[in-house]
Length: 211
Image 1 (cartoon, rainbow, N blue to C red):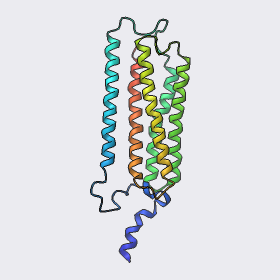
Image 2 (image 1 turned 60 degrees about the vertical axis):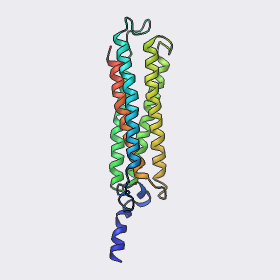
Image 3 (image 1 turned 45 degrees about the vertical axis):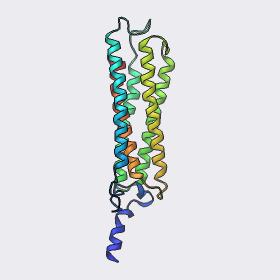
Image 4 (image 1 turned 180 degrees about the vertical axis):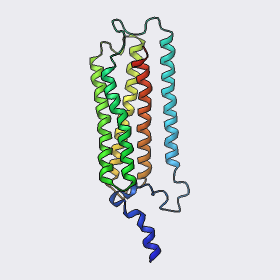
């Protein structure tokens, strides 16, 4: 009886969200390969990185070889407002790290609060990007720079939206303890969000800083 109660103790602190706890993979000894799905997700992120790197390289090559880069009447992009929502997006890496920190300590209320805050910050970033698009003096067809600007920011924005959806699914799973694989889903969402943030830093430097 003593050994049975001791084995059950690690799961008690997690309460209704214990399926998301850090000890999930080790709680069942018959799982020989608990991290295969996360490894697959890391490989997916690696492939996405290659896609973005190809875009970055293409942008640099085309810009270096262009006699006239910006559309007519445009000398560069206004960077102050984009810098504000860039700060929001980068700060969201901190809030998602805090969410994971509180989850690891079984504090589900704080985990859900910071997780939801991260989603809201991602939505603010997307809203800022849409407002910027609406205020631009050029359209998608106004030259190579315009093509690449909308392509790169739009493709990245699609990833931000996907990250928000992924986090929403993970948040919903924290209310359904019968769902398995929660910890891996949490890790995947966190990795994806940090990936999105890093990609935007490179994009910001290419599009707004590099004149």
